[in-house]
Length: 134
Image (cartoon, rainbow, N blue to C red; front, side):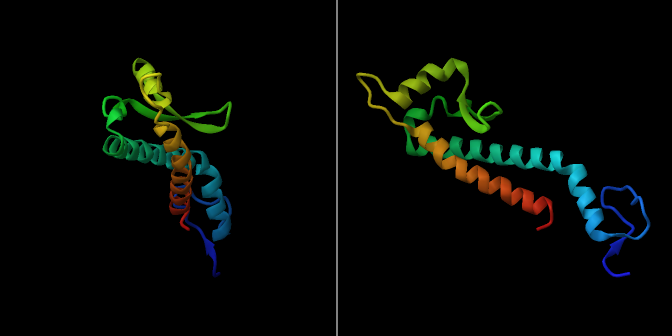
């Protein structure tokens, strides 16, 4: 019968012989969705951090000292990604970012977060599409 399958790529056999391929695929997606999403998010975040670590020092040399201490985490309270700096470099990051009476603010991290949101979203969607065979 066309469009049916008795093989599931995850290694287990279908519950019913000659299960339609669409149901086999739906079972695969539902069973593996948390892992697929977690991997896509993790890879996208790693790529964004690497992008920041490479581009910021070139465009803004004042960030050279702290760029390797940047990170991105997900805040479930606000349902958003948060750009963070290790605690020991937080004061320096605030000084560079918000300025002081002697130094003008740069807003580089705030701009990176704003621009990075679109890159993260696009990367996650692309990785999900690839993992789901689209």
